[in-house]
Length: 181
Image 1 (cartoon, rainbow, N blue to C red):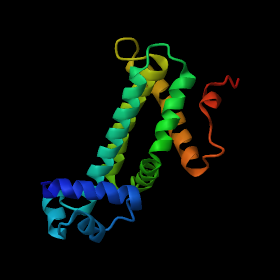
Image 2 (cartoon, helix red, strand yellow):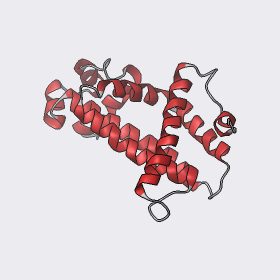
Image 3 (cartoon, rainbow, N blue to C red):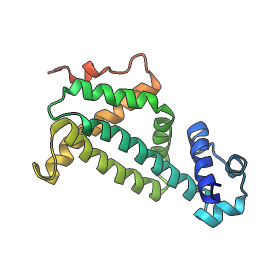
Image 4 (cartoon, rainbow, N blue to C red):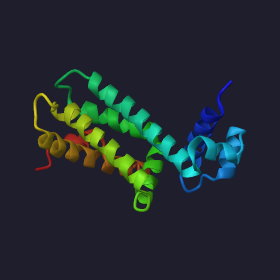
């Protein structure tokens, strides 16, 4: 049988992806988990701590899937093929991306969310610099990895925003690799 803590985490996952951060209430979490309000405070300290924990867990899972898939590609794989994998992953996880953009707005007033997003952004920059430019600590400086990773991270976030708000006009993988100079 699932523990109270795991039932709360599962409920928070369901509620966040269905209703978003602001739309998830304690009442929703209690109903979805079959627990009580006191169990949220006992196990997590607050509803926000529970939601933040699950938000970061969801982001880590998506990152592991995407960056694992990109890392599995042989060196020198066509960038268009890599971007196609990224786009496919975003389309398969639109609920998470809406949640991510909501979390960015919440970060203005929540240091824990801001710090968590910054930490995951740094990991994403490193993974993207490696996946698209072959850069890692053995082959490049930390500043070069940050700069190159930032360019690809900016593209990733921009593509995700376009895919969830206007999927019919969003860039295709060929658009992202076309020489636009």
